[in-house]
Structures are given as C-alpha cells and as structure tokens.
Image (cartoon, rainbow, N blue to C red; front, side, top):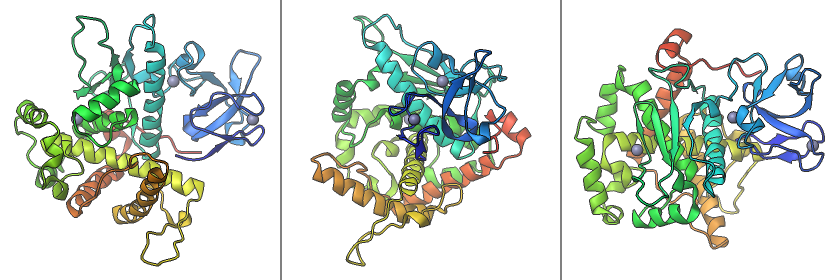
Length: 377
Ligand SMILES: [Zn+2]
Ligand SMILES: [Zn+2]
Ligand SMILES: [Zn+2]
C-alpha cells in the first residue's frame, strides 16, 4: 500500500480514512489516480478534488459511501455506475436490521477495497457480474446467526464468492482458526484466497499454461469434495504432518491443487502489498552484523517490475523483523510461514501469469472478464 497525505493540509492518512482528522475535509479514494483526495462540493451537487491530476474532473461518492458509510471511494461523475469498482461486485448483503451486521459488513467491504487496490495495482481490473454475467465477479456476504439457519461456507463458485459474515467477528474467526489448527486467519486473507480461485478460472483453466500448472501444483481433476473432506477430517493433525512444508505454503494448500493455487496466490498478494508498504514507508534494515537480514527501502522493486527472487529476498528480511517485533509485543508471528524452494517456484508461476494478464491486449481482457487497466495518471 502507498502512503497517503491530505492534499489540503498534509496530514498523514490511511487508505480507510473518509475525513481528515486535522482539517476536517471530506476525503475519498480516487481509484484511477490511486490517490486519496480531499473533496469539495460543486454547485451541481458533485465533488471536486484540488489535485492537479483531477483538474476538470467531477466525482460522485460511491453509493455505499453516500448512503451507508461503508465505503470511502469516489466514482467519476460521468461513470454510469453508482457504486465504486469494489462495491459494485457486492451482490448480497446481510439484513442490516440485525444487531452487528452493519459493522461486520463495513469490515468486509474495508478488506475488499484493499483487495481491489492490490488487483488494480497489479493491472488486474475485474468486472462485476452485472457488467459481465458470464465471467464477471460477485460477492455475497451471508450470515447464519439465527437458530435453524443453514451454515454458510466461505468459498468460490464460478465467479461468485461467498464470505461468511462471522469471519468479521474476531472471536468467531479465532475459534475457527484454532479448531482448524491454522496459524493465520484474517478477513483480508479470505478475500485474497477466494479471488485466487476466481483467477484460476480466468487465467489457468482454459489457457496454454494448464499443463505447466499441473506439473507444479498437481492434477486439479482429482476429486475436490473428497480431498477437502479428508483434509478437514484430519483437522489439527494436518499441521503436524511433517512433509507438507517442503511442497506447500500451508497445510491447507496440500489438500488439493486448487487450494494450493489459491493459497499461493493469496501469499503473492500478501507479499506484493506488504513490500509496497515497506517501500512507501522507507523501511530499511541496517543490521550490525552482515549475516543478519537487511533491507533497503530504495531497492525494493515495485511488484510489477520485481522478479520473484527479489520479492523473496526482501520478504525474508521484512517478515523476520515483523515477526520479531510482534514477539516483542507479545503477539503471534505476523507471517507464520516458510517459503520453500518449491513454493517459490509456485509463486513464480503466479507472478508470471499476473504479469501476462496485466499486459493482455484489451480484446483478450474483455473476453476473459478482466477489464482493462486504466493508465495511472
Ligand atoms: Zn487535512
Ligand atoms: Zn464503494
Ligand atoms: Zn479455497
């Protein structure tokens, strides 16, 4: 993630801010400029930003910003969509009359916008199901908190991603994490994982890269339901199984090639985003001993220009300091994973496909359900 400042007063901002705490200006994220901008109302009921790059442009607030305050993105005033690129993919939301649902929905949308930021940053623009019923992407946020409700399974099915609202509840998510023996479970992690399944359909399924995929990840025609059943039946024992670390980034990745891909994809997004943050913050590690991990913020390449080896080099240093700091604060490791050579090869494969997709000519991108990346101004 980049670092943002209020263009009105210079205050440091977070990606999630909708108002400057210093000068009180309304703020919105302008996706096509990748900037958070202060906004001023125009005479015709729209919004204008003082940024030079936004000169002559007018904006509307995303409908979820305007009506519900669960979004902080703006939409160009001449865009036919009333929702931003992230919100327009939300097809189903929980009943907001139920206590706690609005807050949980807010959390899910907040994490989803981080996902969309990463995708756009990597040149992967997706289209919503309403714009592209065949290949578009949609989310449904479902709750199963009333007695007799059918359980909600978080997952992906042919472009439709279901997220269990309970994942936004820290206590419930932590309970699931412990019950499943997972070292890491976050809302953003779910989004990054599930979108991986969507991109498998878009980038691998019918592509010339399918055989290479199978050589690395295994044959995905293996019975999926049976594989997951077996994985969940083993429970915590999955993590005690000694050999998965050599070949998989997580125990869950070892359950089926599709899950392996989605887990690897999610880790690629974790890496790309956290490395961008380290770079933007100017994070440099200059240890006294040469054999300790070092990092030079100025030499961290942007994900689209980096090789996977460069990313892994910086990632090892970054996660070493992250984990060490967390331990100093009495917290669990921020990144409790090890990247083996086989996993790095899989990350390389994900990287290659992302670079290829982001460079895809418009027609191909159109057909695959991936929109065309707007040139950053
Ligand atoms: Zn300000
Ligand atoms: Zn929105
Ligand atoms: Zn999955």
